[in-house]
Length: 373
Image (cartoon, rainbow, N blue to C red):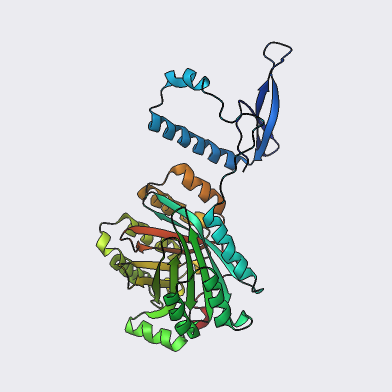
């Protein structure tokens, strides 16, 4: 992105867009009150984006005031400050974003297989943090050419899968009727993921339901190439639970955090989905890792055919609970509010703190459990 500075701007409405123009004032005005401006940048945006810009600018100014104890009497001093970006200087480009490069690498490797796959985005919200650079890619193993095991593990090697995780994935690969490649990254952490998903036979699911026992649905391998750590995650499906049974399971998940605002939010999301479809037709899983105290849930809501905006109230409650800046959250919400709502996950993460993951936007999603009638 080009870096520049401006001392003049103009705003206008053109059709349905808000237009902002930035430039530099030039000397030589012919009449009083007239000014000439050398235009540098012209930006057109829809009104909703302009509103987000206003929120973000207000927050930036408030942070500046807090950081340097900014007072109104300081404005003259700022006006005399030297111009740090003189015209004619070579623009300073921001360094490449490592997490963006790593995210693009996985997309390219999966794309090189030349087969269809599903693409699903998500964001994680936790204490003072909103992480939106996350996605899942889903492939049917039968579609993968040239030997699914070899091709999948070759991709994993390219993105730094540790040898121990590689060996365990190889041993368990036969269970997978589909695989999911995952990515999440920020300035401090870059995590790749491989999920092996099995197709649970109907008889096994019915027997598990009768015994009130879970069955293994996913075995996942997650490794951080920055911190050089990895975990193995088990996703356990509790088949065909009623609304009351899911509520009881959620209370167990959040028991160590009681009283928990997150428990109230999770229940509210589940109740909203239950108004659209019986919860027995949703997919409720619990997530555990032997290496730590993680205990969380994952509720598949695609069968309810909701959009993200259907849980706006619950999302705002998450934002307030985790102290996320309103403008930062609104910028994300406005982009995704009309996307299909997929999974909502939450509970106790491996660091011992509560969190929520919200998945959205996958195309051609399956209707879980319809094959069981």
